[in-house]
Length: 160
Image (cartoon, rainbow, N blue to C red; front, side):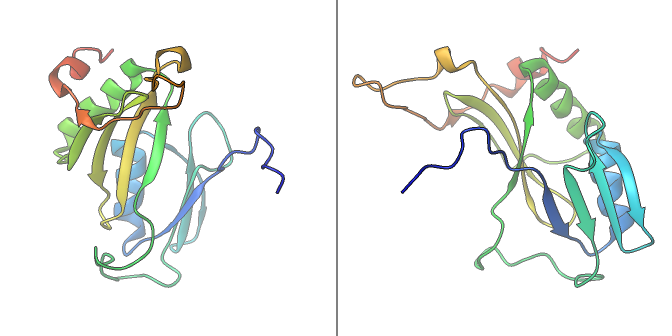
């Protein structure tokens, strides 16, 4: 079977939310995404850097709904990739200012990641990738990702 073209990217995530205004406030006001378009009171699209949308939010089937149960299938988390460690540190500072609790913080060798939940209970990972030449490798050259505790205090010192 032919592999997918290496330039293929995952373009956006579209989430069902219970309260559109609450979700917009989290993704725009806490994480800093720009609101690019609204469809009335039922849907909104947000992005970074002028892209049409990285995050879609809607209440079409979920207005007033409950968060998904952890024991069911579905989205584990959406992952937002920051370009630098300093930008991830800035995101951490924003979370702390907003009183958002982290569920975890890990050093994966290839990346450093913060884990939390959005207001609808969706898992969110905020991370940055280390340069490929710094990724940990096995003796035979394979990738050797790990899950170690992240020094959150040291990360926070990188915030601009």
